[in-house]
Every structure is written in structure tokens, then in C-alpha cells.
Image 1 (cartoon, rainbow, N blue to C red):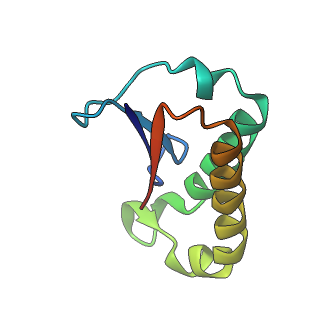
Image 2: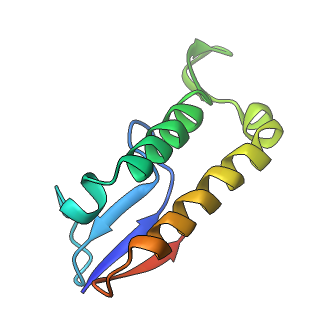
Length: 99
């Protein structure tokens, strides 16, 4: 059984596919080939990545918490849509962990 972990990370969309032992799966066709999930994952990735600013605020990399707070409802809506789509396509081969 696989685990789909929803967790934002810079330069990676929120969808992480893991084996049952916690090791990341490089490609998982059920997820990779779903156009709706791919689009939602990419949109959430771009939104989260936009919170990082480089050479800003006298730091090499600065996270804009105010922008994150201002766009919280947008991110929550995207993650909710991802979870809904995962539920729709779940064939019993994975569980969902929302972090």
C-alpha cells in the first residue's frame, strides 16, 4: 500500500507518494497521469514557491509569512480540491495523510 502525503515544500508540489516504509516513490502512474491532479499540484506549487524571496530583507532566502497568511484560503481550497480528487481516483492502493 502506498501513502499520499500532502505537504508543501519549495520546488515540489504538495503531493508526495511514499511506499509503506516512508521511502519516496519517483513516479506513480495513478497520480502522474491524472491531468486534474497534475494541474492542481502545479498551481499549489507555484503559489507556495511564491512565498520565497531571494536577496530580500537582508537575507539570501526569506519566507514571506504575511503573503502566506493573506493567501491561506486559496491554498486551503487547492489542497481541498486535491484531496477530493484523490478520493475520487483512489482504487484502494493508497491512503492520504494531510500535513
